[in-house]
Length: 361
Ligand SMILES: NC(=O)c1ccc[n+]([C@@H]2O[C@H](COP(=O)([O-])OP(=O)(O)OC[C@H]3O[C@@H](n4cnc5c(N)ncnc54)[C@H](O)[C@@H]3O)[C@@H](O)[C@H]2O)c1
Image 1 (cartoon, rainbow, N blue to C red):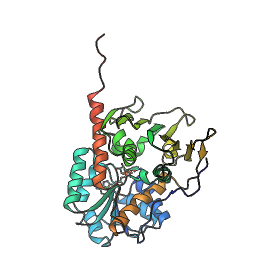
Image 2 (spheres, helix red, strand yellow):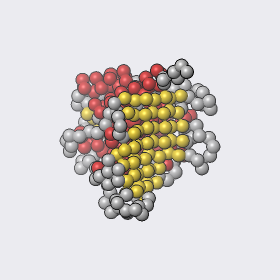
Image 3 (cartoon, rainbow, N blue to C red):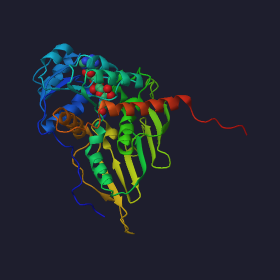
Image 4 (cartoon, helix red, strand yellow):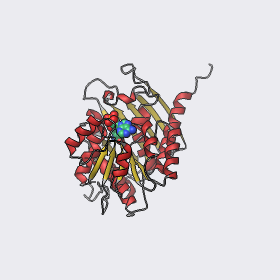
């Protein structure tokens, strides 16, 4: 059955957007934060990056009106109502947060530190300084996810039975040289988006089974380039994440999808971004509503916008709305995000402890 075209696809924007001050002007600021802010009409007041050439290039490209010479200058010169947009590697977050004045708002790129211990420290700093702080788990706000959530919350696919992520693509890891020496890579820096999204639909799993491993074609990426994660919700739903970033056999068999199966229907979404990162290939949103019809068939929903960059409007909009007092809710707050980090930690512990050995025969 085709849907009425009132399925929600966009995040709620702030009535009064706040100015943004960037800390970190690297690849993701270029590919997604700034393009998203341009679409949303959010004002960037200034930015700082420890690499001043990089900062200058970004200022030229996006017209950033002010570059600061240091973190302390960025913080002291920022407009009093500015939100801080922190986009640096996970290990650099805590030291930056320690400098943010009490009570201010900050959006922090994932992951929330390099492991759960760092996440706890980040949470402690945020609580101590009473920061309004959220982690940038923007996949929750991709237009195709907003649409899927709207359909599921309206009960259109019934009870959720099965949720699956499958990624089989050729990821350009060289874009992130900082990842190569890290002990944790694939789950912490990539599959974490899926783990977080699953939590946003299903809550916290009871436990996690996982294996993450490197790939012979990327041996320098010691923290793993492929993973299998089963999030255990008891009998229902069945949830798993399967990623293989070393599919070098051409575009034809690449895959990148999330699938929701329910008692009354299903949704399968191709997230094209992973398939030719960061340019991507077109997304595809398909659904079927059984609706007691024997001839139910798969339909396509036209979705405006994608993960990059539109999803990045949602995380920033949600932080601005919370900082403005427009809402009490902050879905990707550090208080919630630490549970995504705990799920990731459980995945690494499961992977390290291994499976059940074969019994003696
Ligand atoms: N979809 C997503 O959510 C997504 C995608 C890509 C990257 N990321 C995250 O964004 C973060 C940055 O990734 P990237 O791709 O932009 O990396 P990058 O290496 O391209 O950029 C990082 C930038 O941060 C700067 N920097 C480092 N430490 C700093 C500090 N203390 N103060 C100011 N600037 C500092 C670097 O000079 C660099 O320009 C990572 O944590 C990564 O996980 C998220």
